[in-house]
Structures are given as C-alpha cells and as structure tokens.
Image (cartoon, rainbow, N blue to C red):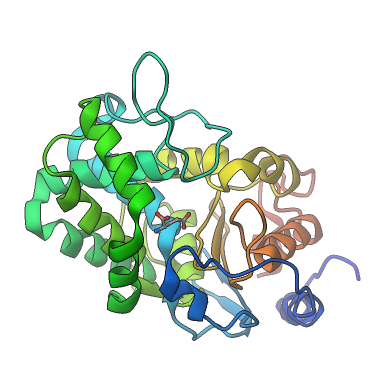
Length: 324
Ligand code: GLU
C-alpha cells in the first residue's frame, strides 16, 4: 500500500493496521499489579487526532484502562511549571538511564534519579507536587489530565488499591530517595499520590487527544482549553523523545522518531509536533514493558506517513497538513 493522500485513505490505512496487528499475539499483560492481570488481553484500539482536532480511529477506542506511566511527562510538566527548571533539576536529571523503569538505582555523584520517566524520577516529581499542593496534589493532577483529554477523568480505585497494597518495589525506591535527601516529607504520602495518578482511567481516544494537545503547543484542539504553556510542552516532549519508551527509547527514536510514552496498562502516546497525536491501547507488553501492538502500529504509521522527525517526507510544511 502506498502513502495515503486523502483523509479517506488515511482511515483505510488505520483500519488495515488494526486488522493486521490484531493477530499479533506476542507479549503478556502486566501482572505485578494484581488488578492489571484482569484486563482483557486482546482489546486493541488505535486513535489519531490532528492538531486541528480531526479524529481517525479503529477498534476499542472507548475502553477504559489505567494511564500508569503515561502520567509521568505530565506531572513533570506540572512540577516545572510550579517550581522552575533550577529547583526541579536539583531533584531529578534528564539523562536516559538504560535501566528498566523500576530500577532501584540513582545517579552516582548527585544521587538524583536519572530522569522523570522512570519510577524513581516520577516518584520524586510527584513528591515535589505534593510538597507544593499537599492533599490537593492528586486533584490538581486529575484536573490537568482532564484538561489534556478534554473530558473529566477519574481514578480506578481497584487498580489504585491493588498497587498500594503490593507496590513494595516503589516503596523501596521512595525510601531510598528519602535516605539520600532527594525526597523531602513523607514517602508514604508521595507514593499515595503516585499510585493514584497511575490509576487514572483513560481511553485510547483520550490518549490521542492528550497527545494532540501536546502537538498543538499545549492547547486542546477540540475544547480550546490551554493545558500547558509551550515552554513546558517543549520540556515534556524532549524528555519523552529521549526517555519515554523505557529502555527501548533509543531504538524507538531510531525507528519511529517522535516523542512518545508508554504505560504498563497497555497505552502508548506519540506526538508529531504541530501535526498529530497518536494513542494506542493493547495490554500485551514486550520485555521492555511497551505494548507490542502499540509499538508495531507506531512504527508502521511513522514509516507510511513519514512522521519521523528526520524523515525526508517530513520537511517544512507537514505531509499531514497537505492531505487534511
Ligand atoms: N504504576 C506503575 C509502577 O510504578 C507504572 C509503571 C509503568 O507504567 O511503567 O510500577
């Protein structure tokens, strides 16, 4: 199939990708949070939203699942907004770690977490937000994610409770951070906000809309509401580009070439700057913790549509803007 040149052909491409990758049955759903083991492994949705708000979708785009790590770039943006670069960078770095997302490891010398996309960094960022907003921190996070999605979101209390009960590894990380003075205040209070933020329920359509909001310089293209200033969007996209796909981030940058973030709930977001937001949902994960079908679909979309930031198709005025 050639590169689509009309919106109809773009929809045909998405339908075809959905049909084709529905038979990709590699990977397993996350089970280390017991409640996540209960999801239906074969659900599968693909949604694209342009920076102007035009939507294309195929499959299970209404199904709710938990956002998990896809909340991390947004809480990072909120911390930057509240505290500024200088203060945030004293607590968390911006280097890819090359380690799994849940590694119990800090940067040698500074004792900071490597970056805000791994659990140690994300828990630190959430602790900073808790330090700013106290008990209202989680409401602020839910509000902000709702503004990005363009509808009110809520927390899946079963998933939250499940992770709160069993999240011993994250608890160990939080206490290590307290030990090194990277996390001030109560480890347990920060973890509670972190577990709740990970359990915010979204659909694949919400994810695409959140990604489209980032692609549209922080303004939701449908509601018109501004969720983030362009300064924070730039910072969030930078860190998603280098660290968003766990320790597959280098390969992702090479093969897909756009900022992205995945979560162990099975979601993936990818952002084509000033053009497009992509959201996928399929809970079977590969060894890195990324959705197998989500990665495959994004790789093929990037190559078909020339989305890679350095692709020759992606020169000056965008390919997508030309057909939409
Ligand atoms: N709540 C999950 C954890 O901390 C999020 C992990 C992820 O999605 O990468 O283990």
